[in-house]
Length: 197
Length: 301
Image 1 (cartoon, chains in turn yellow, orange):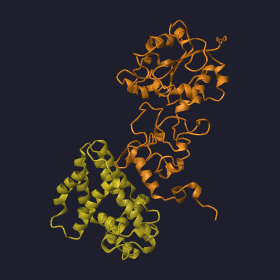
Image 2 (image 1 turned 120 degrees about the vertical axis):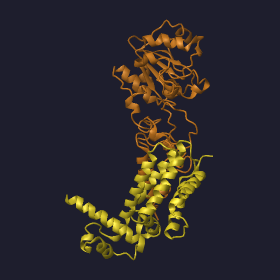
Image 3 (image 1 turned 90 degrees about the vertical axis):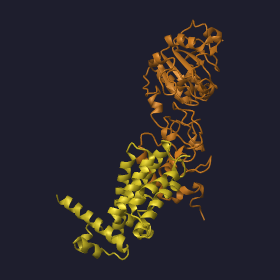
Image 4 (image 1 turned 60 degrees about the vertical axis):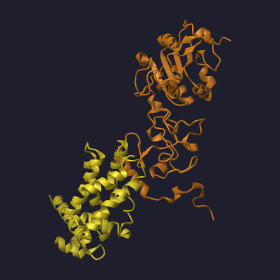
């Protein structure tokens, strides 16, 4: 019972800190800020995360697991690769709408402050769940003959760079239409760019 | 010359469509003479034997061991007698039939000369519909291109000592084929940390990602029972071609087939998702010692 409560508080810290980091930035947000928002003492906070850097890495792993799980559910579906692309785009944009802090953290903290994520979080280590599922998506797409066989990072960059860019524009309130409005055309563009020739 | 000695098991070595590779390979066995002295060799394509081919094709003799090397072609003749007739006769008396080499086991390289009718003795690639399928309890497959001389010697010795040879699902001796060619590979540290060999013939680097190496998917003991007692393909910088498996020969032997940079085939028994997770993490680390020539690492001043 006690363990469950501790886990609940841990999730609460993750949830609160995601919002604060993505809104105010990593360096401006302090542990006292997070502790206050969660409703715990700073001393108690350290029972959960021993430093701000470790918390930052845990957040990336947390987001990567959620994204990875969602993409795996799509990968496991018996649908065409074109439909899978639409589902991944939808899932990503829905997340950007409903839990913008997840994507914002990824874009504005993880990708923009690489110095924090050096030790123990370099390369794929913290984002392995997410990247592995994207690898499986591309692998399956080529295997069933729907996608053009090319370099992984060329395809990955095209797919995720595109989505990240759109969510960034959305966050900056530059997009004239809601994200939902772009799902179909963006999915189609990605498919056209990646499909087998 | 008549070499017959009493009470020795009789051995006949027949050939289908073959390059003689297994017969030649067997000549490299250390202590070959000593092993051969234990058998009465009725017929062999290269070694001294007691009977000529015309006598063998009369089908009046019996044998204890029948070795068949090469792809089985039902239209092929030896001494003007169909191979199928020779097999039908000698399989009856033989206690064991050894299908020697991947051609005799699965069709192999020479299956291509008439793919619709050629096969191995039990298997046609991995389908069990070869001419000796009904006699499969007698057949031991020793696959390879060529077979390591010690692999054949192992089976012959087991026969001499009346020991049972446990077989896998492709009728290969488990003692020799439960391992993968990957086991004992001197490049395993490079495989673990995903450091690839970029160029053919390099001493350093793993051959799996870029050079077509099939060792993690191939049942063989090439890196345990070394060739000429000192070497193996991977040790000299050549990828394993998977020559002991039913799908040998594959196309593009020096190229790893990938889907979006992801190997189409991953190490045997490992789910692709798990492999990608592990490989992605391993690739993250840059280990200086493994990135250059080992001989150049930390030289004396």
